Image 1 (cartoon, one colour):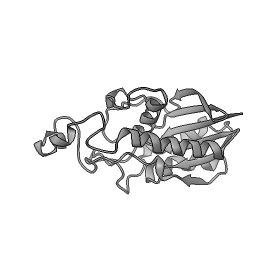
Image 2: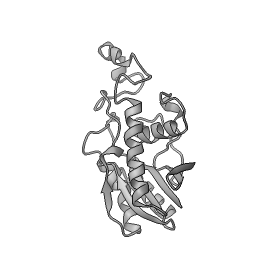
Image 3: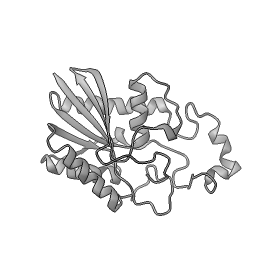
Image 4: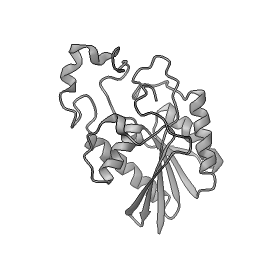
Length: 208
């Protein structure tokens, strides 16, 4: 029995101050982000989606809404799909003018393998995997769609592909409103398919 769990990264966020917003409340989709959500809703309109679940953060809930609406489904919430915790939340972290120039923060950058500045990669992978398997069970024999965030989705993908979890953020294949689709035969993962129905975006752009 084939079941597909689509991991959808939320659309672009309204972030005029260009801060690392992380888990902060009140960060909604930009107009472009709303259009991206609609593009994805159109792209998956013909899919057999029977379960839609999202991170509790506003941008994820707003991205999920048009997809759930098109399939006449409610948006469920799973806390395990939330953005990764990060000590630089609420600060500018762009190269040249951000918090990383301040020596007081340098000790927090000592271990990029865990990482020392935020939620451990392995904990992210484990909670995301739990959310995926719950969604797979809810949609068994059909398709589920989970709206999450770039780092959690990319960390889970690296975990499933047996790659080291630490990585260069500039190398993430997880554009705004992109789909990372996990194909299961029964409970066994047999394929990972990546697609960008709303087009590619630069993973280095702060606020994206």
